[in-house]
Length: 258
Image (cartoon, rainbow, N blue to C red; front, side, top):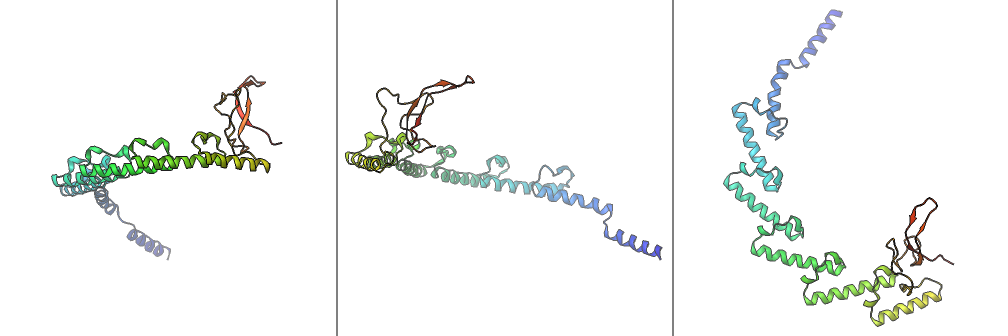
């Protein structure tokens, strides 16, 4: 009985497990699939038959063609393309470059690849983007020279409005009192008097006295808003040495609440 059980188990095991010959025979198929998939690091090209090498080379050329069309220039080998494919890839790259230029990505834009009509369209797009940046107050990316006289007037009006809002909010570091109109200054003074009557902080940016420097050693300036207290910094603290010998640079701080 035991011998029969062992014999049945052995037969079922041998029929369920593929032979070494079968496993060895499957390896070339796996290598071919790996090569066709473009896995060149795991593809053993020299183990392929001549017909398989030809098939794999054709698959690689098609994969390279698709990479070139998609704009993957680092993985694109132009030498593997036929003349017609090169024309199509060049046309695709021109369109991709045109879209890049229109989006305002100037570092990735090759102006030399643009046609005269595309160059004019890109110039209009860049002018519109520059105008929006100027209106939004992004002065570092705003080129006033690219604006028309009407746009310059609109931008100046927008900057004046932004400056007025900064002054009303008490942002002394970004408030330019010289840009305020007489009506805006009168409005601010009225609000400051009302706030002083109610016991609140003054809304007017403080001005330094004749004997007070505009900015201290550490770069903080008279009238800057304190992040910690939310009040303007008007008290000058001169530089001093701590007990451990470290030097504390002069700076401005806000007055304590009474």
